[in-house]
Image (tube, rainbow over all chains, first blue to last red; front, side, top):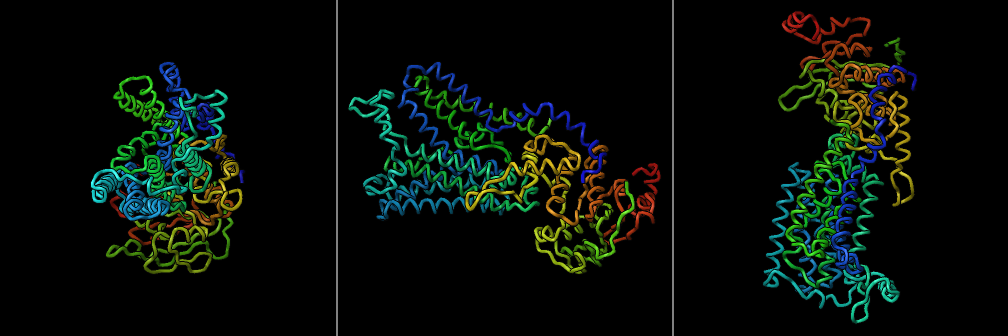
Length: 373
Length: 267
């Protein structure tokens, strides 16, 4: 075709005005821009104030990297779900409940720990599926549905813990786990040889007993890296990722062109449950116990990291890379306040301000991206 | 703008006869007949509640007719889902439910039918292909998007309608159903969309154009079917009816015509 010049004339003038700012617009329309800028600021700040406190020595670095990694695991799930247009407030409770699903069968039923872990993952995926199914079928806001799950799961976690252990912690998982492969898989340290070599070469410090100050990269960091990488690829480079944007951006429009919106959303609820269970398993294997209060308020931390990372509360826009940077800001500030000796109470004040700034910034970015004025 | 059309003599792309649709006690369609041929724009006119949306939802596979016949290419069909209608080459472009505003033009263009490259489980989106095709298809209709990764929200309303139509055409639609594509647009935007509808018709597609704006209809239509209270009042070739008569038919009852005359016939 292309034989009709009059259409071209009609489309032209508005177009040309848009093109002039294309470069700036393109940069500003990256969802993770704000989080990256925030990360730079936070590093500059603590680089100046926490200098010489050990925050940037090997063990200090590993310290805030671990905090970042833990949050990255659940923030990835939260970010994908938010782009898909929904929330999951039950993430924190799911962490506690998944821990119980591992610890109770291992300690009280005599199940092999591998089976308990598989059981916990299956249970969590089922709960995620139910969350999603209820949201999709009833069309209720996911905020309310998962708020109910938050209380149900937390209540069950406490009740089951009291029922079996007569207190709010189920300990002794390590004794039952023995030398099962799941212990190093979720709580081991990777590349110990490298760190011994670095200590001998004087790149990192050594402890009084001659061991390197950092013994390896914690498994939780590897898990976080893999989950964030897979999440990023799925969101930006697969058909399913395109459907996530469609389902969150305009579910009706997506449905009209054949996107299975319900299936996409249910799958995303299962992904957040999966991420929470990875987090829980790492903690249970690390501490050898499951506590009823594990994961309290983690759902908000995950959502905060995702929002700082550029996810819109209304869905259809955001990135996993941004959520990672959101988690990094979180980890650096939380640990930085500890290292600098500032009262820990200020962390929450900072967090609130950070969240508010991020939301304002995001809504500005969205207006730029869509040309609303 | 409407040069003589090559009305083909073979079976119409879509034909319905005495279509009836009941929703419980409500009679939404009470004997509607219409047909659309290749290279023809059929305008479906009618006031609110005339049954326009029930009719298009029936044609696009959302509703099943209670009775009456529904032929595509001369063969009777029965759609159970919108997907069936799409597979039969009937694409519907809804007024404001066609595009995901925050998502890029290229991603929107291929939403639901994403191009993939790679093998086995390692297939990834072929974004380069998507962006190239989206850009070329937009260029064909005279909209120069230099950056197909920009959000659809940056396009004007008329451009969005055009992207939605271009997408349907690209994926092989034979019949386009346009649900009030111009109702929310300004003058320049409207003429852009109407021009494009005319282009699509010239390529041999059949277009069903739903509107309650007689002037928009008259600008692109070849035939006009007027609906009122679930029935077809009649179908007219363009040569056989003037814009005034069409307006009067649509207005239906005398009082509205009088009112319209009082306002100088501008409604």
